[in-house]
Length: 134
Ligand SMILES: CCCCCCCC(=O)SCCNC(=O)CCNC(=O)[C@H](O)C(C)(C)COP(=O)(O)OP(=O)(O)OC[C@H]1O[C@@H](n2cnc3c(N)ncnc32)[C@H](O)[C@@H]1OP(=O)(O)O
Image (tube, rainbow, N blue to C red; front, side, top):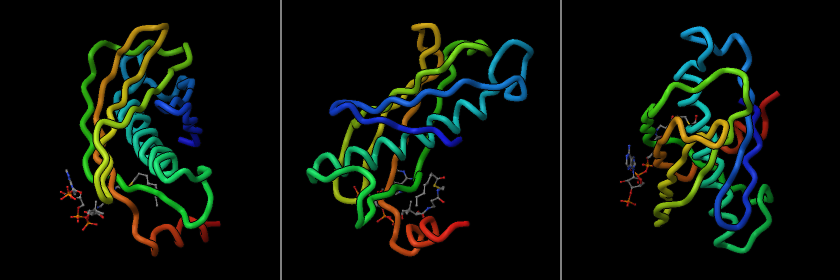
């Protein structure tokens, strides 16, 4: 997705403008893409929140990255293709290695997708793999 999740101290925001090849029904965004945005932004929100509670700068070592354990998505309304999507993420619960994030997608000020991500802290060997990718 290459999205950037930005933490504002309370929630995380990301922005993404779908391309014409992200279409299922003409004029509307493919649901699988919307689920991926909730997934990516949900784990990014979990990571940002984990840095925030420990008072650390996001993205600094030792890295706090999260895997998706569970992903739930509700498509409330068709999402029009064309305008920028704003993806929101907010922490619902945080305990131990687990963070539950509620996330939603807004387009033209209207929420079209709502989801929940259960994120679990990634093990060191996966973070290594991420750092060593080409
Ligand atoms: C390196 C980061 C890269 C960015 C990732 C971007 C997002 C992704 O694409 S991730 C890829 C897709 N996800 C995966 O492949 C994950 C595969 N699953 C796993 O590796 C493991 O099952 C994993 C890590 C999620 C959990 O296993 P494990 O580390 O043994 O944790 P475990 O001790 O069982 O659970 C930790 C907590 O999470 C909870 N939990 C685990 N799975 C779930 C689930 N499916 N639903 C709800 N809660 C869950 C547990 O109940 C536990 O909670 P509590 O502490 O309250 O008892």
